[in-house]
Amino acid sequence: AHTGEYGAEFYFLDPENRAPNNPGVTVDFRAFLLATGGLQAAKDHLDLYIGALGISYETEALRVSRVDFAVDILAPWFEPNRDSLVVPPGTKVTERTGIDETETNASGPRVTGLRAGAIANRQLAIYDKRAEVIAKGKMGWIEIWNDKLAARRLPRVDLSDRRTSQIWRFEM
Image (cartoon, rainbow, N blue to C red; front, side):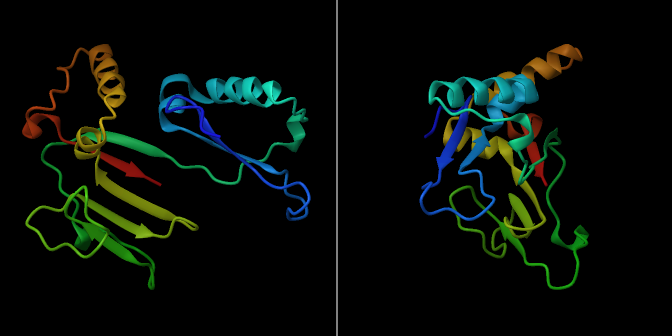
């Protein structure tokens, strides 16, 4: 069940066929919810929807199985460089050259992303968040960024000029 970009995705396991010690409900909070409301908004959202479904739980029954951390950096001068990334031996590293391309080795003149590791394990991703916002129409990020910039009395992000609005996301 998906409650929207400012909500969460709820995954329900079959109670007759689930692994031992598995609570049966997994919740994936969306980035917009966390960026605009923090952990309290996530807790409130969980309580609202779990309560609406008539599911009761004890706080002690909650467990965090994964945490993603992301930082957006306004850095028009930056471009990911594979040679500058230090990773343990055997770690898979892929580069991306375009928003619609699969993650393959870089083949174009401009690198737009770099990923090291695997989703199921430790992973670092650096990618062109500006390009993703434009391609996927996630304009809520513009408001979030501009609110933060305004609070510091800095100029607003104007997506029409990449040279002044290049934002890189670092996810771990």
